[in-house]
Image (tube, rainbow, N blue to C red; front, top):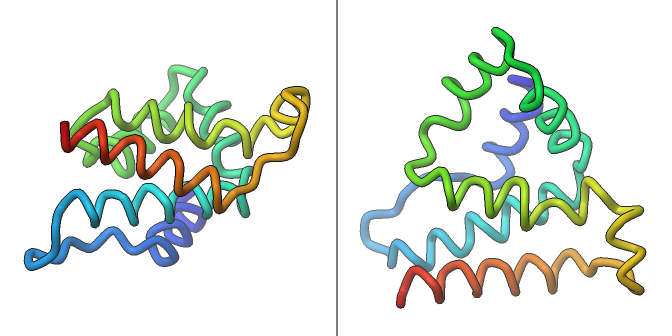
Length: 118
């Protein structure tokens, strides 16, 4: 998991730029996370498995990777809501079309940031 989350952090880059608009930075982080999830749905599948087991591994994952996210609602919307079409592709296809990762990432990022701006 450290290797997988390390790839996510390296590729998405969650660094904060104090001179930039925080919501614009959040939008880019959301897009990056979703596009990473589209390319690596295995990480979310593994996380879903671990999330269903009350174990030391779940404690480690939570303390190491999840706890830093300040709002649990935002976390679940993003990680288990918005990224779900990538880890549950057979279900997503039943809605009639394939998920366009770029379009989906843009739409979700815009929606989340617009809601926060409100």
